[in-house]
Length: 504
Ligand code: HEM
Image (cartoon, rainbow, N blue to C red; front, side):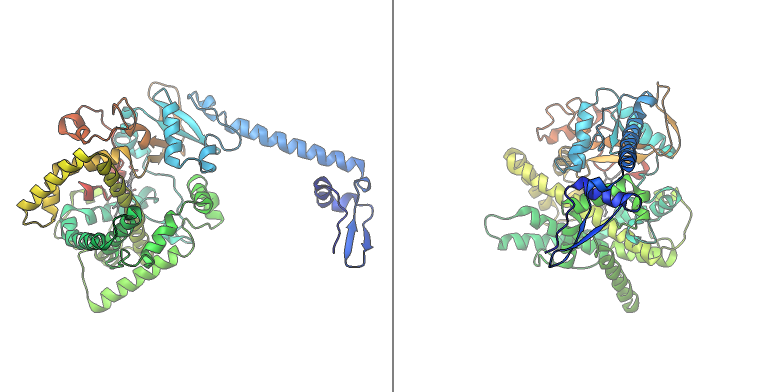
């Protein structure tokens, strides 16, 4: 047995720090089985002890002073703020996973009594904006000063990170222009049969199930099947096969746990450190999976000259021609005239973000909607009546037009998205300095901005009795009575969710 005669942690620390300077003698003792190194505190010169203690004390004071300085940022700016604590700022509950990000932001929203409030995400000063008029300025009228999200992108080491959601500046602008028309109503209409065939599968599956079903898993599999067919043209049948590859990776990407939390905090708050450390924004294996799926799909379609009415086909067109060979030119594509073709990695990143951004959001929405319908039987009865009536008028078939004419369904979905916005907040980065209206404060370039959707959607000021599920809040008349930018489940302005049109 090896025996180390260092008696305390202090001694261990001292011995490692000061080995070169103050060890007078190192005694090797043979105890019969191994070597033990003996070093006693008495063997360290007193001068060195004072030096080390002084060094530690100065370091602690420096760290404290640095934290104090950082944490007085909003005070120095003259902006009201929520007192942070060292070293997690105002995000202790999120870091320790007692709250998710959306709940953490909502707590700040609820504590804020004015139009905006400063807070700290660890050490990063962020401004939460509550005032609908200022929100409108940031998201729409002054978009030029807030066009980015300040997210992690590393095209070289993490090609999947270079997708529409995280790209900034000119790159985002060009890509958004190219991709916007892939979500035009005409193209969505042509994809409807693909979605309908997935719903038929769902219906068959439910008939085969027992009385009690794990709906969350079933809906996650259903959404996976829909997005995999629409985005990749792949029938993965995860409803029947819970271990289907797409479902497996979808599960891994959204698995709550310290690894995913740490990764998102690093990529979201310290993108340059994440980039330097070559951290990947997704769990390992995801990049390789999506790269191989896209490569094989492109190869298969190009060698066999196969065309399908799905996103992958449109992305292939953008890869080969830099624009869509379009039968229905889209007004919104005037954002940019750059028609550079997409590389295969760019195609992969976009196909990935359609999957990543589309599958969990849709599945969560259906989940909460069904939950509320179960809890509110009178709403369910009214909705069933409308659906039956409309289907009767369309030969009993679900079609794009049939769904478009279901007004009450629209209200029920809108109320679900109000109460449970799948993305609970919006964020922007100040891309040019900006004066906060009516104050001497100038927001510096790089300042983070957060808008709490969960906070706004549950604010009794805009939605009296906010926990009540009430689709009547979305009649045309009631919608008009609320200020603009108080209902934004898909975001707002030029960076609004690109998939929003598929829900209207
Ligand atoms: C219930 C369903 C969905 C919800 C609630 C939702 C919500 C959102 C929100 C809040 C944003 C941020 C907007 C902003 O910052 O102003 C966003 C962005 C985005 N969403 Fe969705 N989304 C949904 C479905 C989808 C689907 C089905 C797709 C694709 C197939 C998609 C693709 C995207 C993309 C690519 C962006 C980034 C847009 C950009 O920065 O230009 N989303 N979504």
